[in-house]
Amino acid sequence: AQSVTQLGSHVSVSEGALVLLRCNYSSSVPPYLFWYVQYPNQGLQLLLKYTTGATLVKGINGFEAEFKKSETSFHLTKPSAHMSDAAEYFCAVSNNNDMRFGAGTRLTVKP
Amino acid sequence: ETGVTQTPRHLVMGMTNKKSLKCEQHLGHNAMYWYKQSAKKPLELMFVYSLEERVENNSVPSRFSPECPNSSHLFLHLHTLQPEDSALYLCASSQNHHPKKETQYFGPGTRLLVL
Image 1 (cartoon, chains in turn blue, purple):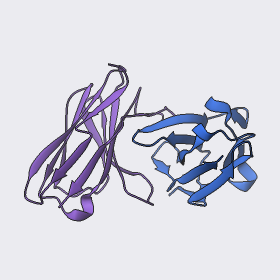
Image 2 (cartoon, chains in turn green, purple):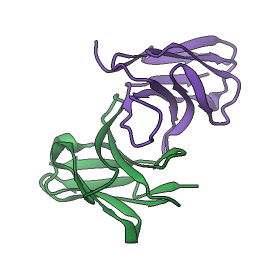
Image 3 (cartoon, one colour):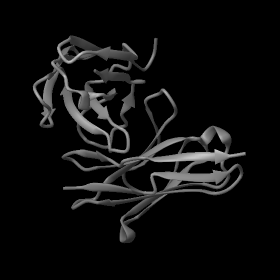
Image 4 (tube, chains in turn purple, yellow):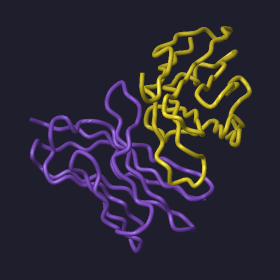
């Protein structure tokens, strides 16, 4: 069975600082990997996903993530945080059988 | 209206009530999903419909009963719920159920409180 671990249920950064949200997965087959964002009172929205090919994936709002097979990781980064990035972020792993979400990381951005 | 819509947005019900949650997708997708989102826990996939047929039922209690009358609409019928069923219920859709690399598009959810 596959699983997802998001390290840190809550991350706080200052505006303009680097954002790093960690995601590790386990999967017996090559995975598909996703990051979704959930703003208050809204559903989840896709930020980016890795299926095949280039391991550095660029998404919306300046976010990117790198698939590192050797580390079984898919960490999400953004060079400079904006106040509007405050939200909850979910990592997800999928194979041809099912899809699993992490428990989420709440990002707070301080002025 | 575009995307995935859900009604009602908020619902308070007693344990003996019967209510229904409604989801509608305007994206022309073939697959629809119900998820349960509880605080500090991963999203729990409840049901999956593909081309109006239920293809996944992840050990969900029978007090939750899904219905998919057509590819655009999905319902979740609720009956004799428990307080621990209080959560945000999210509906999602994707172009197809397989392969599982498709992006899912989520509605805003129904916040359910069971008293």
